[in-house]
Length: 208
Ligand code: NHR
Ligand code: GAR
Image 1 (cartoon, rainbow, N blue to C red):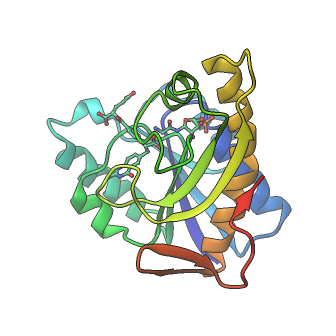
Image 2: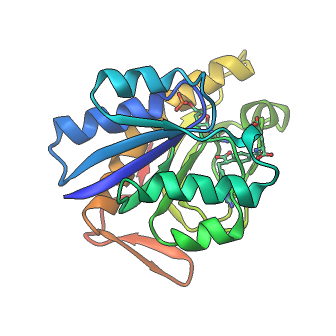
Image 3: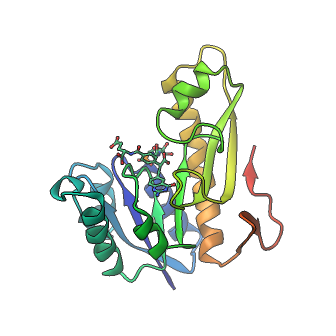
C-alpha cells in the first residue's frame, strides 16, 4: 500500500479528484496527508472531512526557500510518503527538495508543455492565438515545468474564450488526466529513459 502526500495551495479540486479516484478504483495506495503552504486553502477542509491528515507549512514563516523546503520535507516524511503529488501548489521548490524526491514527485501544469511554463498560462495561450490548450502531468525537476512529461490532455480554445472559460475547460480535463497518471505511478507502470516517459503497457498517455 503506497502512501501519497498531496501538496496544495488553494481550492484543491485536483486533490479531490485524486482522493475520489483512489477510493473508487481501489488503488493500492492511500492519500496519507494533504499539506498546504497556506492556512486558508479551501482544500484542507475537504481533506479533513474525508478523514485525511492535514498540515500547514506556511512559506511566510521562513526566511528563505531552503528553510521552507526543509520544513515541508519534514512534514512530508512524517507521513512516510512514497509519492508526492503537487496539485495547484504554488511555491517553486529548491533543487535540494526536488533531488530528495526525485522520480516520485509529480505536478500537473495547466498548459501543453513545453509551451507556457510558469504562470498565467491560459491568458498567454489566448494572447498567442492558440487553437489548442490543455494540461501536462510531469515529473518535477529543478528546471521549472521542464521535467519529463507523463501525460497530456488537450482541449480546444474556442472563439470568445476568456482566461476564465478556458481555465474551466482545462481544469475539467485535469480532473480526468491526473488520476490516470498518478495511478500509473502508484502501479510502478512508468518508465523513464533519456527524459522520455513511457507507460509500461503502451497505454496512450493522452486524453483528447
Ligand atoms: N518546483 C520546481 N523546482 N520545478 C517545478 O517544475 C515546479 C516547482 C514548483 C511548483 C508547479 C508550477 C506550475 O504547475 C511547480 C513546478 C509556482 C510557480 C511560481 O512562480 C511557477 C510554477 C509552478 C508553481 N510561484 C511563485 C514563487 O515565487 C509564487 C506565485 C504565487 O504564490 O502565486 O514560488 O505552474
Ligand atoms: C489547476 O489548474 C492547476 O493545474 C494549476 O492551478 C489549478 C489548481 O486548481 N496549477 C498551477 O497553476 C501551478 N502553478 P485546484 O487547486 O482546484 O486543483
